Image (cartoon, rainbow, N blue to C red; front, side, top):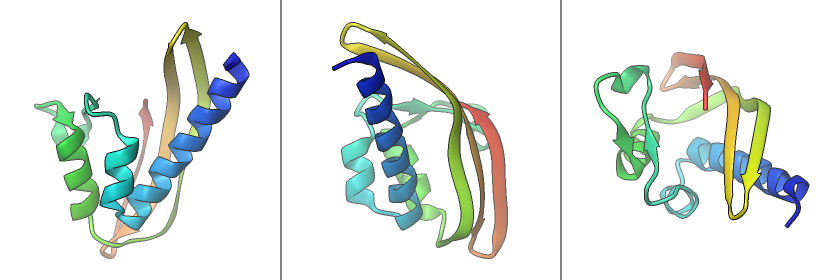
Length: 106
């Protein structure tokens, strides 16, 4: 697979992840997110979240209404069988009637 093909596949999977979170699709999230996934955010300032916590938070967030989510300035670097991806993740949504959003380095 060429670097360009890898970047297109990563873009596709990132959009699939956004869509799965929006639908609160536990099976799709489990399939997409790597078993060794780690995340931190302003809501988890004192700990690293793992795949199980990430999926639980996606499902506990409540119904997502409207809004937008995107990955911008995506930079993919391919080293053999490994790709490192950096991007700016932006989102603005309404969850259970409350506005949420932000800009994050991913």
